[in-house]
Length: 315
Ligand SMILES: [Zn+2]
Image (tube, rainbow, N blue to C red; front, side, top):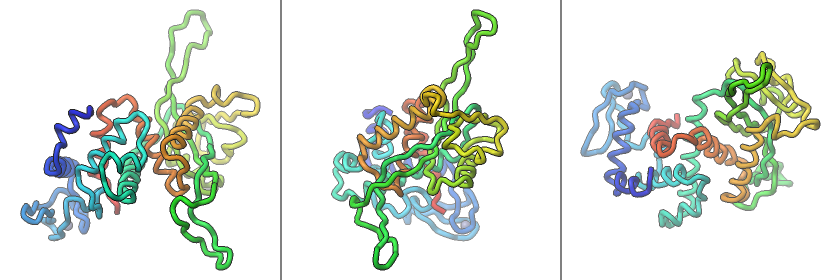
């Protein structure tokens, strides 16, 4: 959505709130207590939903990404707009300046919640077709450190962590396009990137790689991976697996889309967010993948994000 259009539609808090309620009801209001869907009264004077089945009352924000947030609806809409309309991304500090808000922490928190929504939405889909799988290492800060006297892990003050490499499983699918043959037996097919998933792996064990892959990649897919990194045993459930000895190949040729995604996401994170803290890396990757997977949606990315946000549930 263009900026002018955005401010025409969301020019004040009342409009944002009304739009939020309209979208929430369109997606379906689910009672937090008895799970019944679309069985409610809207109590206008109290601004609460009351369940017709069990009488439970909940606020407009309750059960959505905005639950417990004191920030205005308009802030949330502006944040979702800025995060989806910029080709790259925007830092929390920049967002705070744009919103003119006094505190950094709550803006930072809001942006992370939006990234959780993005991740949860992409988790609804699995990759298929030809899928490249690679493991990459991102520089992160580690904010928990062991106290040498007690052996307990302590939460260090934000921004003061030590350096750490965090391992990420990168999965990129491609579709094969056939060009018209000029000579017989000529291979005229070429690949075009489709979708992307990036998942932080804690320990990088065979079991962890296996379960992460199985959640993310459909079993009918054919897999291409680095022989050394991608543990052949992790891909047992897949019929078609091609493993390459990458010391003999250029990774850009064998795994072109995952290699590009790794380079681009690392550059972006470094340029906009600088060093990110290990526990939050997944959220930044969620944002990168969400936008990558919707790169041809144009202005619709914002609408899709808002719909995902109103139907996001914490429980
Ligand atoms: Zn109920």
